[in-house]
Amino acid sequence: MEFPIRCATPDDTPALRALIDRSVRGLQAGDYSPGQIDAALAKVFGVDSRLIADGTYFVVTLDEILVGCGGWSRRRTLYGGDQWSGREDSLLDPARDAAKIRAFFVDPAYARRGIGTLILRTCERAAIEAGFRRLEMGSTLTGVALYRAHSYVEVERAEVPLGDGLTLPIVRMEKALPI
Image 1 (cartoon, helix red, strand yellow):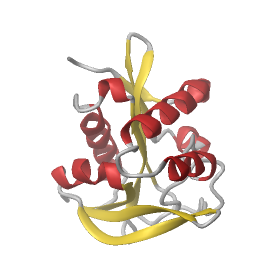
Image 2: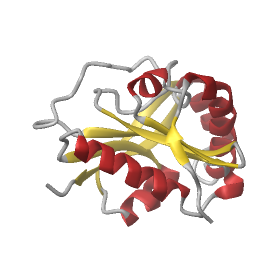
Image 3: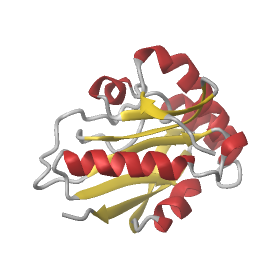
Image 4: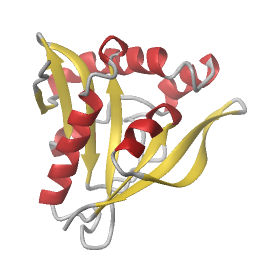
C-alpha cells in the first residue's frame, strides 16, 4: 500500500491533535504508565506549530485521514509540542549542529506498515538538502526499534520531568548522514 505524504498545514492542527492522542495511548501503553501518558500528552507531546510554519513537518494520509506525522527541525528544540516549556527556537548551524528528528506519531490501526519509515526518509532527505551532516532525536522507548533499524545509535537515556513525581524516559539517539 502506498501512502501519500505532504507538508502539514495549520489547518491540519485539530486532526494532528487527535492523531497524537490515538498514537500515544495506543502504541506507548506497553512502555509507559497511564499516568505518564496523560502527563506527557498534557505537558510534552503535542502539535509543534513552529515545525508546521517552517515547512518541516509532514503528514501521511489515507483517504484524506491523517494516519501518521513527523518532522525534522533546524531549531534547537529536541522534543515537545507548543505547550512544552523547554523549547528553544534558535536556529542550528548545519556545518556544526545536528538537525532534530521530531514528533513522530502513527495511528495504531496503521502501525508497522512503513509509515514511520516513509516519514523518516523524507526528513533525512530534507535535512541533507539543507546541508546537515548529522541528525539527533529524543526518542520515546516505543520508537527506539524503528530508529535503530535505520542506523540511529543510542547516545544517552534521560528522564523528562512531568510533574507530580512522574518522569518520561526517553533515549537520545544520533545518526551521521552521508555527505
